[in-house]
Length: 258
Image (spheres, rainbow, N blue to C red):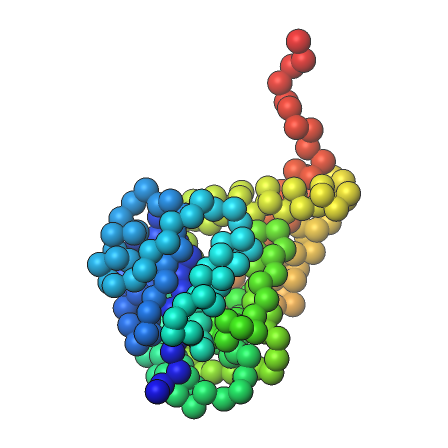
């Protein structure tokens, strides 16, 4: 019997690219969608594609993935592999073929690192720290740990890993407004994380970190080779770093005291 593979997607109001994401996972034995109480057609799209939809209030990426993996580990027959995508991602044809081959081979590995190609402004970024952006997205559920840092999560395998060719295709933003909304959210989570660690932040610290981030993205990570998109991305990255450290020293209430 071929190794059982489960597709996993966390969703929230993800109807924009979800049909293409689901279609690219059609070779999986089952697709599990953990939805954070979407108000658009996300759940209807997932159910129409044959996915199992589990609805759960969002408590952060760590709790959400732990819930999903606990559900998958309890499935019968058991899943040998999990293939995880975000709702704004899908598999290239090359990658899908290589994943199917890797699963069929069923090597004694904890998982596989996969490159991700992301579109920004007017191009797929090839520098700026955006590519190859290898992520552990095909893994054995029994040998996986989820770690969270601020607004970001990552999978950490408990064993040896391999690499697969072919890209996850990623369209993270529809426009600059959406990117700035994400920066606003991430900056607040980052500031809260700094406060929890007892790091006060400040304007000068924010300026230093902002300039350092621009230098890193535009020069060290060769963002200048990504043209206008590289410059805009570096500027937004600098703004995020500045905003995070300024908010860490922000007083909680700006209103006048009675």
